[in-house]
Image 1: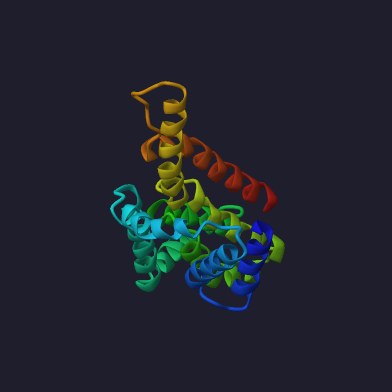
Image 2 (image 1 turned 120 degrees about the vertical axis):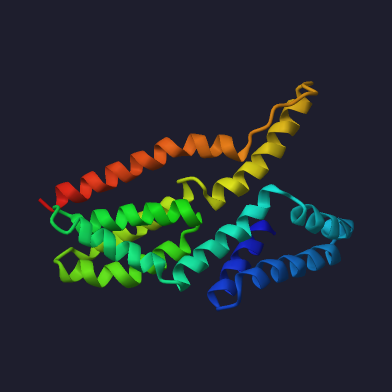
Length: 216
């Protein structure tokens, strides 16, 4: 049942339906079908309103729509475009300067928006033609843009870390309670941000060093 649900979600998304409606609609249809076949307890559906209310009142998850809004503002105001062009001009005399500029600006956008979509879209539209014109191999150009965009998954603040922090905090508390620890510690989003900072900076340095060496 779980595998069929996953395959159905992928097929419906590939067909062009919005992700939000696909996830909700397919899950509800499978719940109704499972209840008809005796594979799903329909009483669980009664918990949906309380779950929705709990998510809305969760102070940690408030950061998610704010980050998305910030990314949209950067994209629509073309501030990200100006950052990329300024970085390219600043590093134009360095070997692999344009690629390094893409990585640095991608990291900056990742740290301010926390999302991948805005970064990859902006970088792809602006930097890919410029990198190809300057003789970058298409594979290197596309790889640089993708790696710069995915830095938003790890460099704080990150939407993934915000969501992961909310889940881990609850799971860690439950695990401690099951062990008999009735004053459990929590894993906060700030702890995850602190733990991801050094790996994120290390990735930026390694990407930049590789682009510098490849352009020599």
